[in-house]
Length: 250
Image 1 (cartoon, rainbow, N blue to C red):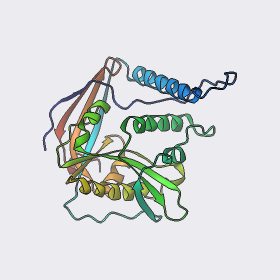
Image 2: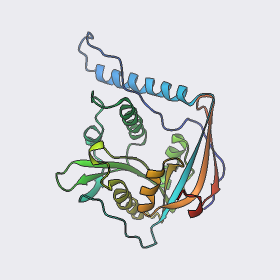
Image 3: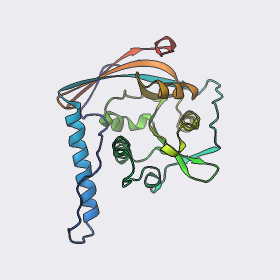
Image 4: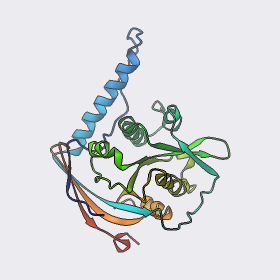
């Protein structure tokens, strides 16, 4: 499967920031929560563009799993099950108003919720079998969503037999339990239900921990991506070259 240079009309995933404005003295209105949410998103988009600067560069691994190859994933340290994402799940997994959360965590949650708002369907959550709490979320996209994937920016156009697994999040309460790799393996297998043989996922070349987690889920380095964004993200270009096991850090 070969990829050509791709260019997006929009910048990549838009990172939001915690809404600093407080509306203490505003009159009660049914439209106020909607207005607050719109303003929060617009501030996040502006901050995202400014953070990109005039030019920025990012290198990522495109890892791929072949679902036709037998693979036994390493189980998590807790019992888990997978189901499709429901409307109320994000508020349980990633509440937006959490004063004790660090600024970096607040930014991460805003960024991931922005992705969820843009993508909509295709999300899967993982449930902790001990107490029923949600402990992981990730999105699985198919080739019929290529127009959406192009708008996200930074991803190649999918072939008909390929799916994209992206935007994983594990809440702090469940980190270090092997949830990510076990969950990725289970969610990736759902792609077979819509005819995909291959599943792609992307990891920054400097994110060794996530890379190892993906490898434990059956993914291997397939491509190396260099992503260039210029003019505060108005121009977004990705270059790809073939990769392999030897490209991954030891």
